[in-house]
Length: 117
Image (cartoon, rainbow, N blue to C red; front, side, top):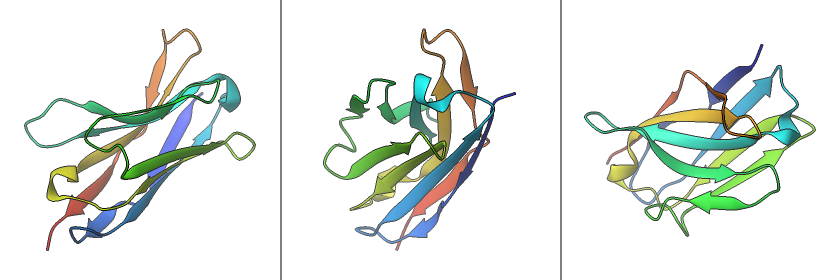
């Protein structure tokens, strides 16, 4: 059974940094597409960044040049480094894993990120 656990959320000031972590279990991690999504109150969940199985990275335009994403296939972990945070980055951030054909998808329970002075 696939299990995803996020950690690292919290409160940051504008311009600050936070790092989010996702620990996965129950899957052959290196074969799956992995990523982070977020959902702010009143908004739809949106893709923030992902790393597909071949290593290609995709970012939302709103976070390009500020966020980086990395994966450790041996440890089955996914990391999102968030720099130059803005109030509009405030949201619940979810770890997501998709099967190689993207038919199946799993979600973590989410971690809150709040950017405020």
